[in-house]
Structure formats: C-alpha cells, structure tokens
Image (cartoon, rainbow, N blue to C red):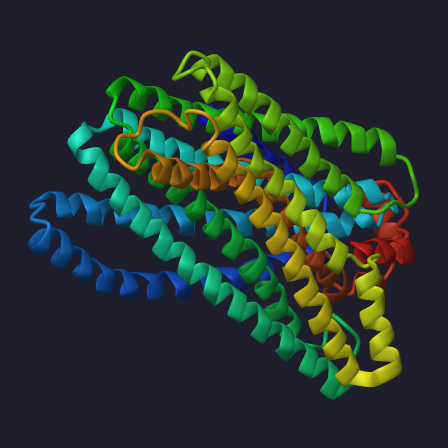
Length: 489
C-alpha cells in the first residue's frame, strides 16, 4: 500500500510537470525554485553542524550512561536517515509546488476557475501521499526487517533525526517567510509600486518564503509528527501491555489503521474531486474554500468509518468485547479534531468571515492602532474556541478510556496508562488524515506563488501575446478574469 501511495504521488508529479505552461511563466517558477534550492542547501549545511552536536550528546548518553555499546552507531545512522526523510520530503514538496504555481497561473488564462483550484490541490495530494507513504514504509521496514533487539535503537535514532530536521525547517522557514514578506512590502511602500511588481526584487524572496514557511515547514513537521507519534505508541504498547499476544495484536492494528487512513485519504480525494468537478467544472465563478472544506470533512468521515470497521474486525474479540468501540471513539476524537479545527480557524480568517470584515472596518475607521487591536481581539477569541474544542475532544477520549473495564489489562496503574494511551491515540487519529492535511496546507503557497508568477512574467506586455497563446495553446487568454481568479484564491 505504501508503494501504491508513492506511485500515485510520483505519477501526479509527472502529470503536473507535463501540463501546458507559457515559457515566460515557466522561467519565473524555475527562478523561484532555484532560490528555494539555495535556501535548502544552506539549511542542509546548518542541519549537519547541528547534528554533529546532537551526535556528541547521543554518544555520551547511550554509550557511557546507558552502556549500549555498538548500538549507539545504529542510533546515529538512523538519526541521519530520519533527518534525511524530513529534509527529502520538504525538498520534494518545493519541487512539486514550483511546477504547480506556473501551471496554475497559465490555467487561469483560460478563464475557468475549476482548473485554478484543481492544480494546486493535485500538487498538495502528491506531497501528502508521498510523505505518509515514505514515513509508513520506513517504520514498517524497521519493524519487519530488523531483529527485535535492534528495532528499539533504530526507532530512537529515527525519531531524534526527524525531530531535529523538522524543528529546524519549521522554525527557520517561519522566520524566513516573515522577513521576506516584510522586505518585499517595504520595497513596495518605499517605491510606490503595486503588489508583486516585476521591478521589486523582494518578490522572488517573498515567493521563496511562501514555500519555506508554508510548504517546507509543514511537510517536514508532518513527517516528524506522524513518525514520532507512531514510535511513541509502539514504545508504550511494548512497555505497558504485559500480555505478549495482545501486544502483537495492538501493534499490527496500529499499522493497519494507518494504512487504512491512507486509503481513506486517497478515496476521499477522488470522491471530492468528482463532486467538485460535477458541481463547479463549468461554472464561471465559485467559492474556492468550499471544495477544500468538503475534502476535509469527507476524509474525516471516511477515516472514522474505516477505522471502526478495521478495529471491529481486528480487535472485536479482545478484552471484554468493548475494546474495539472504545478505541474507535478515542481515535475518532482526534480525526474529528482534524476537520473541526480548520473550520474554527476559517471562521476567523476567511475573507468572508465576520471577524475579518470587522478588522477591515476597524482599519478604515480607526487607522493602524484600532486595526491592530481588532486583529488581536479576533486572534485571542479564535484561540479560545480552538482550546475549548481540543479540551472537549481530549476530555471525551479520557472518559471513554475509563469506561467499564477501560482499555484492558495494563498491569500496575492501569487507569493512568489508559489515559496516556487514549491521549496518544487522539494524536494518532488527528494525524491519520495527514495526506489531506498536507494537501490543504500546500494549496496556499501554490496559489500565492501563482499570482506572483503571473505578475512577474509580465506576460500581458509581451508582443503579440494573444495570437501566440492562441496558436500555441489553442485558446484566447482572458486577462482580467485570470487575475481575478488568482487573487480570489
């Protein structure tokens, strides 16, 4: 199944690369990618220096304090593999996104909004499916191919490495994108030029920052979080469940559910894409947020359904017979959070939301000071509702874990272990629909870059461009409509 996920991701990559694009737009997207490569190479050098310091700590702790002997070398090796996994997935994400941005900009010239929506989402699903498939493949390889006494050190090293890579790429990417964004805006203000003006050299840095902050960071972070959560659950099961037969059942169940959720993400994407194409394929305009929201909700519902069926099939006879539905409900709390949290965020950040309109009104009526205060109020209010949702779902998982005979025999302090296991499964469920989460995250930098690619290409100013596009691509460009769609996304 992991191989099939990789095949889907790489096939989508190949199809995106072959999509039609005007040479002027391709040149801009390749310039953005070249700048992204420079950023990633610098990050790679920094990561290796940081890894050298972490390696010293690993050797001192595991060799001299834990007396693990030659196994320390395995931990070091797999820390490099984990770090390479985070870094490699992030690089793949940037490459796909910089294909998709120019293709999206070119597709907008046709004046059909669905293609402007479809290309960024396809690129995001490619990244998400590759990310989850690679992570699952690596973890399964460690579990199935290596001896039991080596699997533990391998998981430790793997988790350390991917955490190190993700932390650096996430934090550095977030800082880079803000600096680049502010720099481009300062140039715009100082020289009185429009957004994404081709005369502003800061725009390329801003486009690179969009990828660094909204693609590299989330991709590396998703890879790490997905892996570390799995490692934590495997470690907990081996340490807390005394019955070896039940250990094996739970470990197999964990990985099967992850595979099932990967399948659910893929099927949900196909279903949502078919619905969106039928509904919006021929319309002149639609709300781009609606099919994204429906994708998240369809994935959440399908993941919960398939999780319930899988858990009943695999663990239906375990314990007192109630174990399967308790585990299903607990995981579903996390899966539901994956759909509910974006909706709560959208209520405060969508261009159509009441809170955004209030901030705009504050800026018009009260200037910068009232604008900032209004934004802070909306941000804090959104944090309140997000916190309430998370606490409610974790509380529900905690209550279910202690119902009846709980989650089975876990030896001493079983009730405490049930709660810990339940909270781990909530995180597990939240990350289960990771392929779609990454796809939605990657949608943003592609559409942001597409608008910049359009402006930086100065395609409208090229001589005889209408005739050239008509002759080469078979349609007459609709310039105003194209700009409208790119801005609307």
